[in-house]
Structures are given as structure tokens and as C-alpha cells.
Length: 409
View 1 (cartoon, rainbow, N blue to C red):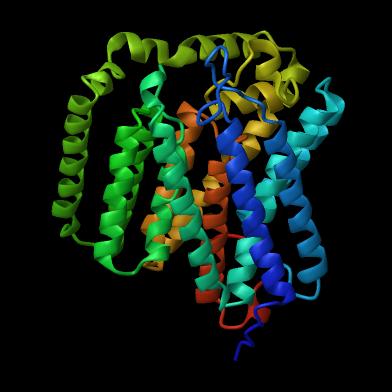
View 2: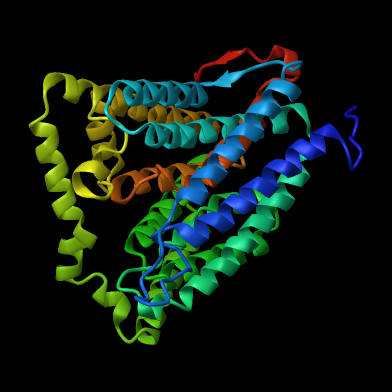
């Protein structure tokens, strides 16, 4: 029998303290991000981008989680799922590259802080789910609160969409909660309703990458569910969802005066917000690199130093900044996520479709955007941590049976 803590307890202070810091981080991100910033220069009208406050929030969250892990989980059994171990390895590699490259110390500190934040976030949720079953409802409440918060800020940002030349990047901040829905609600009606709302908002954002990610997530989750049920009965429901998505596209294109279809015109796609040029420059830089630079990379934030922006492709970004070693670790991380998905499918897990959607979102982001330096990835890592915890609880009857070093079958 699990002893429930009082309202004011070390566990609750640690738990709700983390979510409070995450909420403050989200507010700061909305105020300072280039894609979703709601603040503008009163003179020029241009979006104000100053990430320093967000970077400080990251380090504050990392500090809180480190203190909690040291002071609260030290007496508990330690276990490291394989993806977490690779995230830790990737963090150490980024630190090593940063130390031996010419990157500014603060830049290395922030980049390593992001990776450390994701490692600790995944570990935090895994441990909470496994060690404290009563934390499930608390996680559901807090995630639902964050979803509503992001929904409100998305709608606020959408009011400025007509003044933007590109789609609203905050679409990802809403889309990332789509895989969370099965964890938050068991009733089919509520799940379908919220899924429809999220799909509608993604189309409304006019963000091409988010729409591609949405389609990939729907395909991944539906195919996974059909593999689990070994039935084609879900095909009609899949086509209904697809037809609804098409209807949203038509309605929103009409509402925006043809702006949505213009986003997919030949000229827009070829320019891709400069992606084609960036990819070409990145590949050229990689091709002309020395053997050492090709192996170990050019250092943290190399794309910003060379091009003034990210490469908008995670694989090219990692190959440029962290070399073949860094991109190999990244590949291994996603390979293990796919292996975990296969294990969940073999177990006919209720959460397998949601896991598939989460992995599809991350992989799509790596192809058309980035997972680095975005709070969106934090929500995904939190979900992966919850899934790991649920998997461990269903696989091992007693926490003492859980091996400290977890590999996938």
C-alpha cells in the first residue's frame, strides 16, 4: 500500500515546484522565441528576440531537478532506460566538443543545459510514475493545465498571424500535446474531440512543418493501432480523420483568402524560409571540413556562427556541430525509441499509438526543423519518461526486480 503524502510534503514541493518552473519557462519562451514571440519593438514593429531570460530559466529548472534527484531520489533504486543513457552520452559529448572548440563558454553552457534538462525531465517522470503511483493523477492535472495554457497563448499569437509572413510556430506548442491525450483521457469521445481541436489549430496556424508532422503522427498512431488489434476496422475511422483534416484545410484556406494554399505554392516550397539554401551551405561546409572536424564537429552553435541561424535539419545540424560521432549517437537514440515502440506493440500496449505519434513528431521535427533549443521537446521527453515508467510497472511486479541498466529486447 502506497502512503500518500500530505499537501505540504517534500515530494509535493519538489513535484509542483518543477511544474511551476516549467510554466514560468513556457511564459518566458512565448515572450522571447523568434517563432512565437508576442512582444514587438514599438518603433520598428519587429518581433523582439532575446533568449537570455529563457536560457536562465533552463538552468534554473536543471538546478531544481538536480537538487531533487540528489536529495530526494538517492535513497531509491536507480535505473537508466537505454534512451536516457544515450541522452546522457549525447550531453557529455556536447560538453566535450564545447570545451575543446572555440565556442563561447555561455553557448556551451546553454546547449549542455538543454540536453541535461531533457535527461533530467525524462528521469523525473519515469521515477515519479514507478516509485509513486499516486503521482499519475498529479501529472495528468499539470499536463492538462500546461495544455490549456499553451492553447490560450496560441490563440493570442494567432491574432498576430495576419501580420506575419510565415506560419505561426506556436503550432508545435499545441501539437506536442496530441500524444498526451490517451494518457489524459480514457473516454473515446473526449480523445477524438481534443484531437480534432488540435488538428484544426495546426491547420489554422499555416505552419507547413507542423501540418506535415500532424499527418505523420496520425499515420503512425493509426497504423500502430491496426497492428495491435490485427484488424482493419480502424481504417474507416482513419479515413474520417483524414477527410476532416482536408475539410479543415479547405475551410481555413477560404477563411484566409487563399493564404494556406499559397504556403504550398512552388515558390514558397522552393524557398522554404531559406531552408534549401541553408542545407546547401551546411553540406558544403561539411564537405570542406577537415577529418577532425568531420569526426568531432565544428563546435556548439556552429551553424549560427557560420550562417546566422540553425540548419533547419537536425541531422545536418548535428553533423556540422558535433560530427559523425554526435550524429551517430543521435541516430542510436531514435533507433532505441523505435525498438521501444516495437516492444509496446508486441505487448499490445494501450499507449503504443501515443508513443508512435510522439516518435513521429520528433522525427519529423528533425527533418524540417529542430528539436534542439525548443520547449516543445521538453513535453515530448516528459511523455517518453511517463511511458518508460508505465512500461516498467507493467513488466516488473516489484520495483526491486527492475535492473539498473535497462536494455530493450
